[in-house]
Structure formats: structure tokens, C-alpha cells
Length: 169
Image 1: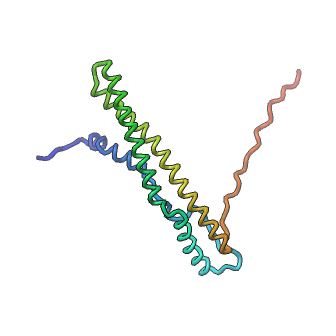
Image 2 (image 1 turned 45 degrees about the vertical axis):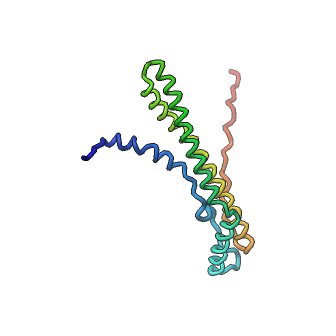
Image 3 (image 1 turned 90 degrees about the vertical axis):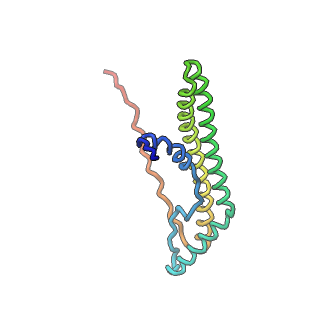
């Protein structure tokens, strides 16, 4: 016996998995900053320094894999909690109109979206924190070996226009 689901039903069935999958925090795989060979540093030496400093940066936070997993679990728990709270509120409001099941389903969907958006923000903050720790250790190591780190130019800010001047007639 074969079950044929419409595409929209299949998508809705996979939506919670896709939403929770978006809350995954991965540990840094490399620096997010650009290192350049320092003055009088030959390129082969720069490559050796880069390899060593990548390992050094990863070793400065040996628990980053566990920290990333913990943050992912926290983000998933936030999304699940949002779903459960939304389902409860939806069921309570649905009971007022006599449609408990529909209210719970709508509340669960709204809670999943709200919880997933909050969890996604938490996951991004955690990933940025891990990447920042990695980048600082990498930069310190590279500069310590005589290489340079490319810095971003400061954004140019325009001055606000002068206030209007009204002259008497």
C-alpha cells in the first residue's frame, strides 16, 4: 500500500525538522580574518606559521566542540518550548470557540516559529562568540610570528545636513 501525500503536506511534515536544523552551532573551521606575510617573511614560512597558528587557535578552546553542541541543544530546547507554549495557549484560546484541536495546531505553529526565531538568534550569537575567540587566538599567534593581520578600513560617515535656515522676508 502506497501513501501519496501532496507536496504541501510533505513540506509541512518536514518543517519542524528544518526549523530545528537551523539552530545548529558549528565550531569554527578556520579564521574569519585575513593574515598576510610580514615584512621579510618568506611565503613558505608564512604557510608554516599559518598551519601552526590554526592549530594553536583551536587548542585555546579545547571544549569548543562541546560548547557548540551545548548551544545547539539549548537552541533546540528553546524552539521546542516555544512550540509547547504556543500549543497550550492555542488550545486554551481554541477552547473558547469550541475548536481546541485547531487552536492547538495554530498555536503550536506560531510557537514553533517564535521559538525557532529566538533560538536562531541564540545560535548565531554562540557561533559568533566561538569564532571571535578563535580569531583572537589566531591573530595573536600570527602577529607573534612577525606576520600581519589585515584590518578593515573604518566606515566613512557622512555629516548630517545643516538644519534649514529661515530668513525673514
